Amino acid sequence: MKVLVTGGAGYIGSTVCSALEDAGHVPVVLDSVVTGRREFVRGRAFYEGDVADRSLLDRVVSEHEDLYAVVHCAARIVVPESVAQPGIYYRENVTKSLELFTALAELGVSRVVFSSSGSIYATTPTFEVTEDSPLAPTSPYARTKMVMEMVLEDLTCATSLRGMALRYFNPVGADPAMRTGLQIASPSHALGKLVDAALGRIPVFELTGTDLPTRDGTGLRDYLHVWDLARAHVAAVERFDDALGDTSYLVLNLGSGTGSTVRELQAAVERVVGRPVPTREAPPRPGDAVGAYANADRAAELLGWRTELSLDDAIRSALEWAQRRPQLLGG
Image 1 (cartoon, one colour):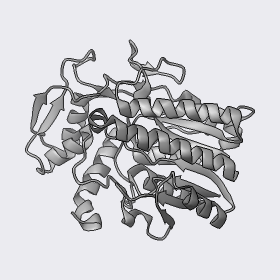
Image 2 (tube, rainbow, N blue to C red; image 1 turned 180 degrees about the horizontal axis):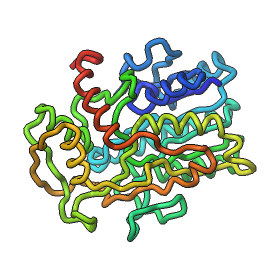
Image 3 (cartoon, rainbow, N blue to C red; image 1 turned 60 degrees about the horizontal axis):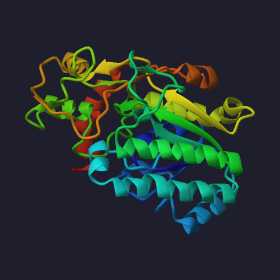
Image 4 (cartoon, one colour; image 1 turned 120 degrees about the horizontal axis):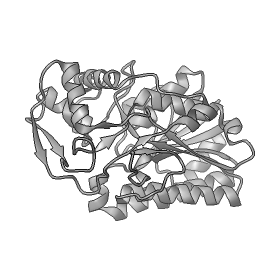
């Protein structure tokens, strides 16, 4: 099958493309390369531009009339940045996604797999969430994801579109084959900072938020190996019609089903590298949520998907990628 992947030059999108290729499918990439990397699209059909560029979308579809589905990964994703610049996030993640979805409906490309986020959930007493748990996004980034889920669901009721929203939890690690990984040199998320501190690239890991209502006071996250996440997209494309059945819209959690606090993540990194990581405590970042972990039973039932790789696997791949990245990407 041929699949259009928006944001396919980015961290998650490029890994999805590799997983699609490994499964015998053909990814077609649309990416503005604002944050993505050209190195990640070598050897693939690649269109440089904006997802809201209608003339470009017309060209992509006319040159690939056999597109089976679209995986929409393109988005701005940095929580503190969304708090500081919410207008950019609503323009990039909401307005442009609406333009994309509207164009796809008009062009007759009906299957849409949307990259959503577990950050839209409200905190629950047990921290476990199902797809039916209450929603309460705490940042502009998370709100853009919730809004676009609502938009996609409404469009599937009124147009030819059929939609599957995949609520990612916390993707970490790199492609085990080291084809792709985090493209940015200075990641802002916890594992990226821990890796940098463990490798001596920054002097200390800042543990942000230590008095939260979790078992050790630090934020709780469901860390999901990015390769498991990529495999889930392959299953979503391959089982799209069967998973939706007679419905036009479906939501699925993608997570490991296990919650780890940031202190526990730090301990795991120290276990893998075999030495302590220098750390200091700091206030929580703007927009950070207390956290949650996924009940992914619905994805197991409808996609036949469960995680296969461990947190330690993800840490090892993240460390290897961080060491290889300067040679692979430069800078």
